[in-house]
Image 1 (spheres, one colour):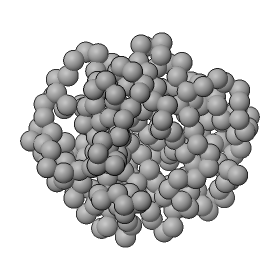
Image 2 (cartoon, one colour; image 1 turned 90 degrees about the vertical axis):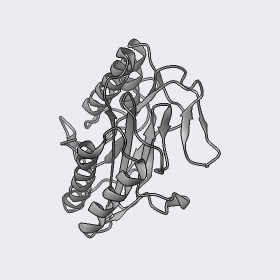
Image 3 (cartoon, helix red, strand yellow; image 1 turned 135 degrees about the horizontal axis):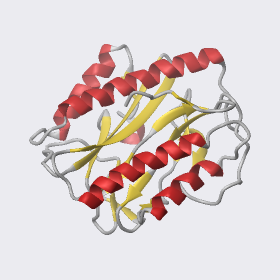
Image 4 (tube, one colour; image 1 turned 180 degrees about the horizontal axis):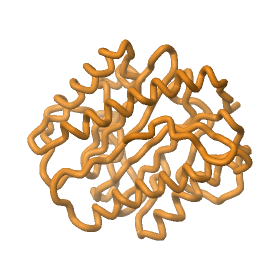
Length: 249
């Protein structure tokens, strides 16, 4: 069952989402060559705790950090550590928070220094695909219209959509129904209703869509070692146009 949130709940979700935005904007100011991903994670955690919230990822099914920081071929769930960011990297930062019982969750891929043109295009197309998906999140459309918009745009550009990972509903739990695939035909699944809240998150690979999980049990990487990009927004379904709760990234 897909939850439909009241206006009062959406106010709380908006506050959680804004804190996620603040954390990712902090990341934007701090990401530079030479920075250890562990250092960035610590600063993100400090910000979240300072706002009387908690990092939603920390401890979730045993995840050891407050954010996921994934570099280059790492698709998602990268564990922050001693790895230093380098010029030419793309760095995907995914942050989740719980504030007053409601969750926010968003991600963005940052570019560090000069990167190859095809990787620049990968990042651009991934972000564009999220925007096109959000345009489909209005009353009367069906759930699969979201993923179809992503897949169509991404594959027209020559990239591939990860199949093994999906977006999700979000509210009083970080992961709620429904799962939101980033691919598939249009016009299928439940009709969207005002007040549904989704985390839409295309994960797009330069090469094959196939992925693997490293021995750490978390870090998902591309099977062919080529780069991957990840963008995520929380949105509320509205009649004519979705509200982006995590606007401002």
